[in-house]
Amino acid sequence: MNESQAWARAYYRLRQNWLSLVGLVLVVFLLVVALAGNQLAPYPEHISGSVDTAMRFQAPSSAHWMGTNEMGQDVLSLVLGGARISLFGGLAVVVLAAVVGTMVGAVAGYFGGWTDEVLMRLADLKLTLPGLILAMAVAAALGAGTMNMVLAISLSWWPGFARLVRGEVISKREEVYVLAARALGAGSVRIMWRHILPNILSPIIVKMSLDVGFAVLTVASLGFVGIGVKPPTPEWGLMLSTARGFLPDYWWTAIFPGLAIFLTVLSFNLLGDGLRDVLDPRSRR
Amino acid sequence: MSSTLDQGAEMSLLHIQNLHLSMHSFEGDAHVLNGVELKIEKGQIWGLAGETGCGKSITGLSISRLVNTPPARYLDGQILFNGRDVLKLKESDMRQLRGREIGMIFQDPTTNLNPVLRVGEQIADVAYEIGRIAPEILGLTATARASQRKKAAQKLGVDMLERVGIANAAQRARDYPHQFSGGMRQRVLIAMALVGQPKLLIADEPTTALDVTLQAQVLKLLSELVSSSGTAVLMITHNLGAVAQICSHVAVMYAGHVVESGLTQEVLSHPQHPYTRALIAALPKPGIQRGTLSTLPGRVPNLIDPPPGCRFAPRCAQASHECTLAVPALVGKSDTHRIACVHVQPEVFA
Image (cartoon, rainbow over all chains, first blue to last red; front, side, top):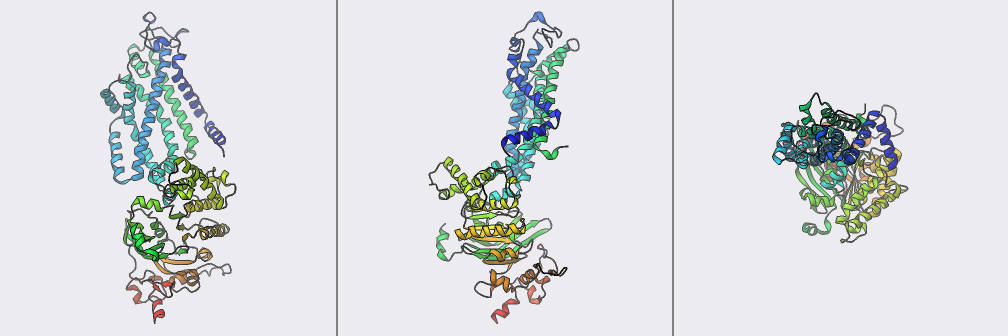
């Protein structure tokens, strides 16, 4: 089987569930928006913070599809502009957490014994604290800023990956091909990198794609409570938080950022389910 | 390394002396190896025969020191490979032996190859690692760069696939293990084990998972490859037919102890130990009458609480009081033929 056949088969499996395809299309759409939000926005100057007080609280119309907010900014432009922070924030959190969690889990699972105990109790310790509270505390301590926010959330995110990877490594470590590789002179690094990690990549990728949605949600939550990115950078959680004071009269200021969050979480979950079907055929219904 | 030189020419390739190993378990410590004795010289092909659980595989794994400690514990004895006790080597030194000096093949070719790595890459990985210690195997000098080594390793991998009879080797090297049949996978494993031109090849039931026609092919291939290079082989098996086919020597194990060893001819034609006799009598022959297959009464002893003295005594027709006094030592009947049974010794030395 060559590469193109493998891709064709992966696409075939993904297609078995039309919801996964919807997820894929939506994720691609969201990524395009995140990359080109400023170009797509009808009022790009609003994204960078300019206000138009004459146009406050305009209801949705052909000029402002999603209406305007309390400062007369076009909500559609802000939602498009906010996609960047939310999506890349969410992706960065998951990638960082997956890298750290995989390293910790792999070391703990492979070496076992005291190494395992210390690392996993550390992870357990982390799991005793509610993730959002920890992230808030850390973000508040580090100060506002996108990077700090990503770091803060990742700090509460890695133990999930560490536990997943540890379990997988423990089961793969006992495979005969690992023993066979050791018998022919492979060292720990080679066994881990060449023999174990490629075999456990699927669950990691699936968890990553399922987690992006929740990470986006967490980024928005931090924005909502006022920790995270600084205004005027548009951010969905922050927009929701501000709009809260103008409900229910100016509902459009809250509904549209909320819908954007909802759509992002939903699409990454649909895609994650689809990827699980592709990568782990045994768990298919 | 100095100890290697001290012992000079009399040194055997592999000399296992009085090896005792216990395995920790919930029920207690099982005394799995009870004084294993084995001596292998260059170019010899040894069969290590015995029933399931007698310690054959643990002995094989011990030579490459692949038994996890704990739960296992070496109580006594040594495994001298080229005069060096592998049980006392540092892990980094041990890694230099594995693959380069000691090759290994395991039983089930379906689980021995990593399913997500291309076959060629898996052989090349082994060759690359060996090229660090012994660049000459890749046809390189010690100053070769990693990229050169990588390239040479890939080429050697394909060459090895060709040597074990994989048609279209260059192309098949890009395939994944699931695209190979069982027999071909076993050939791939043989290629991997021999890529470092090891001095000793440990083959743990290399043909058990294959059907009868393939067994013969694989055994023939194995003996051809080792006879051209002078590699010694320790073939662990419960198939006396396979032993008769390729082995020059055979050792029979029972419950953690070598009960009889010698030239294949001697042992299989004139078995002395009651266990060896029973084992040979139990071989099914094509002309056998239905229901007349002979079996050995009783069961393998519990190794947590083994019977005193000779561990075979409870199942042995010739057992007497003396048998329960002490574990009988392996004593020579001829220069090569050695038996561990109190009833055999008096006949010889009387």
